[in-house]
Image 1 (cartoon, one colour):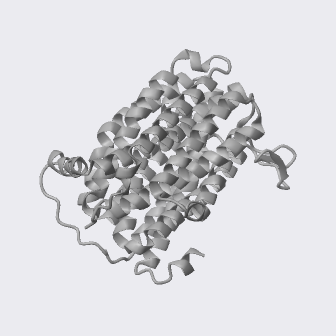
Image 2: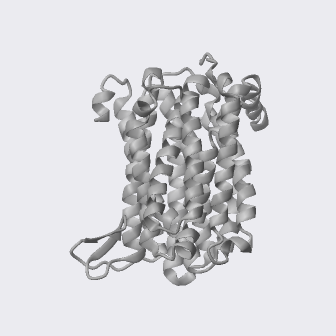
Length: 431
């Protein structure tokens, strides 16, 4: 479908290979990132996981902007080759340490740190690379297909996590709240076996990216000066375009809440509040991904009547409502429905936000600008994690109060977007 829609794209084979490489590693990464919070929740060690999450978030305050300078300075294909090699080797080592009896909570937590650090450079590099090798008229379609293919990977990851975390009983696998007879028994995997699978996909992605041949469609100037000087260029660009800075920060609010729920709160919500098993937790990720796929397919049609900023306002307020409902319900079916809507809102916002930034931010500074936006995401995340790590939120079903706080946060973000809506409609020339 997407190949036909983009049949005149100049770097079509390169983009197809990049999609494929991203999808293969994304499946295994997704399984690992579902398994890690569930591991800590089952061990009753969510306090230690909160500490791990805070550590990686603080590290990201320094790593994210630095990685943005790397994305803008170096060949983006080479960056992918380096980070897949490093991540694959480190994850292989961790998996073997665990399999040979040296496993511990901090070893599992180190995979979370590694994967999150990988994300901090992977996604800015992916979007900047896509912007570099595709024509501007295809930006909307490219961002939509990135979302669709990425979320298909998450659907597979969710189903895989349900199978690997819980195994089967009498051939029955619980997925999406339904029992499926897969015809054979499957023993649950240890978390280190999951990590080894994850490691293997990094090396497959390396080979696919190595084979990419492309022609850059944007002239990039050589970057000189220190890291601080190069970062200052990105910051100065945003200072002279405050409307883009405010839009980039406020439109990230849904993503802040999704990172907190998917990687931290949902495991406790399912275990303590819904009192359900790992298959429910894994299935929630599938519902989230299905909603995101729907957004990738239909978000432009749904909001064809309005502007990108207004569409993001609507989805931000919808997400605030979803979290408020999760605060007030104990139904697994309602939980699945809200995950579906949150997946749609977050993915729809991401598609539209990236398209807006592609058409408003020059490629030369895109990596640094996106990393500065992400810094605000990290700061909000650290604040919320510091609050949610308090013992209160881990007693009984008190995790629901975290969802109430996220609902209020999104409502306030939506109000900011409404207040400055007209300033976001100003066009900026991209070079």
